[in-house]
Length: 332
Image 1: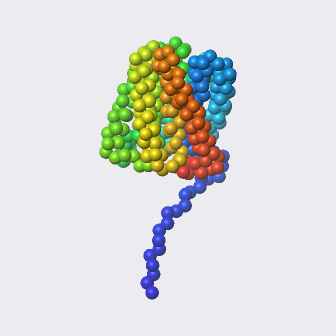
Image 2: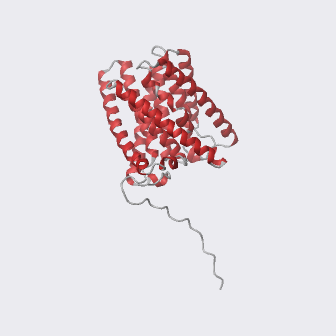
Image 3: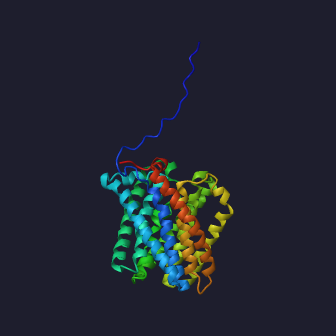
């Protein structure tokens, strides 16, 4: 009687060692960015409508997001405090490449939220966010230089690492830093154009696998942010052009929505949230007069339905303990 060859089964996932916050996933930060953008959008809508009731709700929402973000930042930040090398390890996988820079961008968005209440603190936060993002960018560049070729393929997450500085002018412009804001905008436009072209070239070679397709939505975020900053600088034509480009790209994703979400819900759906909120803000801010009120309101309502849902699902997965392993978050 011949002995059959044993079948191979992959080993079960290794559970993180016991302890508090040992595998906090950076994937929690993109949907939190979506909540920041949603709160800022309702603040802007309150200004457009002149409604104190809407303003009160917007400020309450921003306060709640501030507390939630600070808790998430402390929880995740305990990992590099315990072992600094974990920061570079997070950037070796795609969820970390989107999540870690999103943490830095969240600091900049918190600065924009706090600007009406504490301008000096907002300025400190925006510089801290840019310094954090610069560190992330340096570590990510080192990863790209040492990684195998298949790990260096262009990704929409590159916008968060290299173009995310364009969020800083949302705080810097009201504080009078117009020259620096214009410089940041122009540099970021060049960087984003390079990423767009590289991603288009890669897309023409091979479409992304179904689980990664939600990340395509990130491509709309830079255009929306460029529109917002250009509007703040008084560059109305530039602002209108970018907001229209962002809306066209978003519409193309909507047409192909069933293809984009073919893999079903995943933590990467956080990539839908902040571009949608950014487009809502840009539509409210960039077009002159009342032209953007109704499109901006429609996008804001869509974000109000989607962003809290995605954030709840992602944060729920974190609290249940499976999100870190599912997204290959680094362990301390």
